[in-house]
Image (cartoon, rainbow, N blue to C red; front, side, top):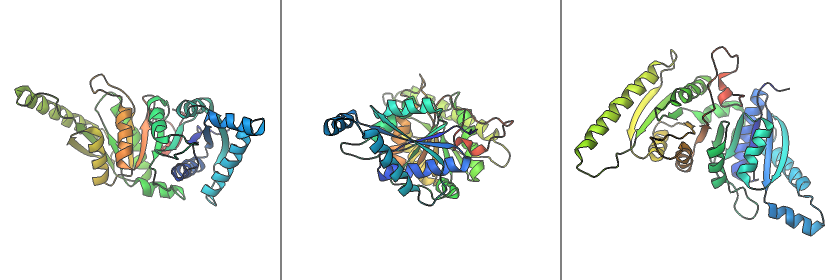
Length: 315
């Protein structure tokens, strides 16, 4: 029995999901976790199969296709212990259902996939999964071919960027991002985006509000960096503008291959963070690890490898 929670990888047989599969297999194989591949068929395919053959053989056919896809994609790389699951229905709810039933610790999926009749609508599906997932979700870029071995993941990460909104969830997100950065021995960058105040120009209160927000943000960033473990002091940046655009720009300027973002809402900050995360995915073309509110950093007393927040976790 595996002591590490399984990895779930939804695929649609596209090149994008091939890259995601390589990440999922590499992570699962390295940490000894079970890998579950899932394909969600359109219910119309099931009806067509019944009409054509008098019964449905779609599950068996899809399973064989998944097995071929896995073998072709992974080749001679170290292979995880893999299971294949075929579902039918709306993609996002089915992915989330399989994740719950399998006790998944990490979902790995591509940001975009196929077009045409048989597809997962990965663009909208990824966004919906991010809005409802209860486990960390690693989203891979559509043009990322994926790693050949675990060390290639470190090379892809290069630097970890964690955008922080300075809410109660921030310390946990920074702790997880810090563990990942330490595990891969790469730099960590904290970035806080101050959005422009929406007010009539010339309003004298605007400058006062802007100044107060900047002072508070600077103080919080200083506290977060001072709390970092010795030898792991992150770089802290304060930027101004629209969150997604600025996060993508910082990722490019600092050559960050992995962005660690929280998925949560705040009555003070407007839309759920998932919408910003999805926008970042569209702009940054980098690995994005999305952390739901339930995700917690590994405690110092636990013997789990720090990389378990890139790998599957039970917490």
